[in-house]
Length: 313
Image (cartoon, rainbow, N blue to C red; front, side):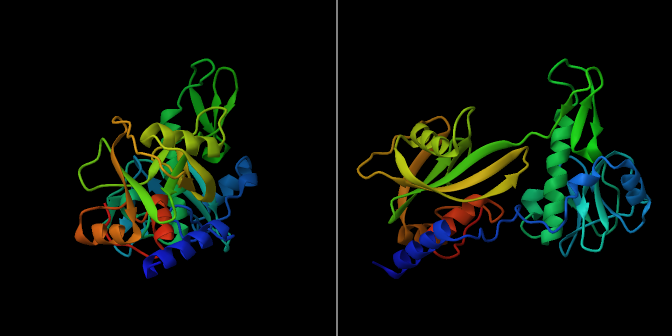
């Protein structure tokens, strides 16, 4: 066994046996979400009147960012009008809100979204932006009641919507999706989506269907996309992916021996196996571009490999 293979095997064993997740860019955050305060109108009014409170303006998934990088946070008096979401409270009892509105013009800042800046922000700022983007996406696409079609209005400090006709309450939607690294210990399976340019590869993923367990979804998606069967599904961890509304649930899955790849030709354009040495050579030469460090796919790949790799999308 080579040094690469030995390191990778220990990395994979640690990943599936350990009790901690490790670092995931969008699974961070340092605020107390204070769910019990969302219906406390007196507390919310007092918090909004407190000029120590901080406000993140969010517009179509973008926020203003300074060069550090750090989010631009305003006082309530400085914030524009717009739908307002309570995002949490820090250890100093300072409240944080999101406001859905056009971004103000502030010198020395630029608009950025999660893809560009999520992995670079502090724990607090990454958590704020992830939550605010998720809430804004949901509010913008759920303006009408799914029961009767009437307009809905924001409630619970931005965490529910109420139908103006029948009074029904609706909660933010999150779609569970599995993302799985298929391996046979010595090799990893990487694939290219039909919609991607050449050289870009990743691991397999797909949405969980109604009445399906996560493990069933892993096995079904792998069989549908590349025609092989897997077993020994091991859960790594999860990361919100509010682009627009997913929760990515990461797994390792072991392929049965002696199977031929049969890509579906629709979602998956091509797929092949790589040893650790082949993977390292391919990314260092630029033959392959791996998912960015904001993604759980990159975490799974590097945990299987046993070290960091170069080559981002």
